[in-house]
Image 1: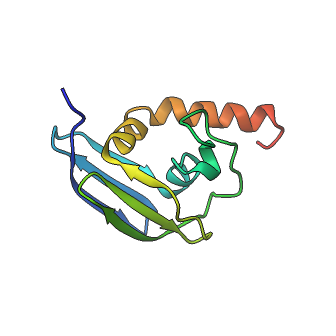
Image 2: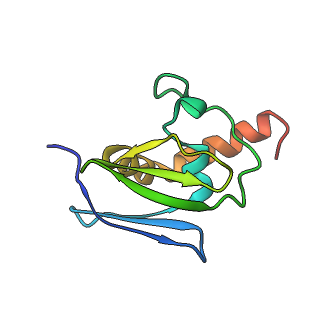
Length: 116
C-alpha cells in the first residue's frame, strides 16, 4: 500500500503547530521547532536521510510560508531564513508517526552534547 496523501494542511500560528490530516484519517500536530530541527534539507540531513544534524536554538522558530510542491509535498519557509526543505507527504507522515521517539532521541543528543 502506498503512503497516504495529506488532505488537509493548516498552520496554527498561535501554537506554532502545523496540523496535517491524511486520507487515512491520521492527524499529526507537528510543532514548527520539530519540523525545523528534523528538516529533510541537505543542511540538516546531509545528502541522505541519516540522523539529522543537531540543530539548537530553534525553540521559538516560526513558519513564514508553506508552498505546494506538485501534488506530493510542501516547501516550508521558516523565519530563521531556512527554506530549502521539501516535506513530502511520506516524510510528514513519518515525522508524525515517529514524533515521540524522534523527540526523545533529540533530547538525548542535546544532553549528550551538554546542551540541555
